[in-house]
Image (tube, rainbow, N blue to C red; front, top):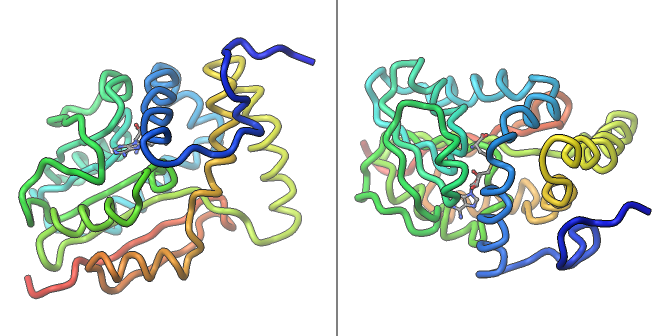
Length: 242
Ligand SMILES: C[S@@+](CC[C@H](N)C(=O)[O-])C[C@H]1O[C@@H](n2cnc3c(N)ncnc32)[C@H](O)[C@@H]1O
């Protein structure tokens, strides 16, 4: 059996971290994988992620020049697409490593999504790609998204999902649980790419997520699967009169 390079709990079997431990581990993990993050994303999704990102930015449906926050912006894929649509974009992320690898020409802020350093109603839109399961306090982060949006502001989120078709699900399980960790080991960090498929367990079911979004101050919540459930798009409108 291959020996693991890093000491510490085995990410394939250790209980998933919570609280401050989760925040510290998530930050360290993204600092580590930042240099090869984009390459791994393209390989893991066969390049489909960019089409999903374009769809999420389009779902904001805001006028050009609107100010948009890319929350958990990482290397800036969503920011670049939002800039291309004519929005003014600010990126925020927990990981200094991901921010260093960010190639989008936007202001960048190192911040935890549950404590955003922005004024109430500062943004017309918030986009957030593949980060919900990484947030330590999801309810507090959704409340912050609502607070920094103006009434009528738009939220567009992408997250991984699980296919419902049995055949599709079997292929997905083999790819993400077996092949992706091997690919991650060869190109990036094996432990991180063993942890990522497990982190799906942090995601609340769709009904619970809808409830949390409404509780955070959103209306018109829509959740739809992409590519048979490989990914999902979540959109919502900040309640209140613009
Ligand atoms: C899977 S990456 C997604 C990056 C980018 N949004 C994308 O679509 O490629 C998740 C990002 O969430 C960030 N993140 C995790 N926890 C966070 C938190 N509590 N606050 C802000 N960003 C966080 C990570 O540093 C990482 O950049």
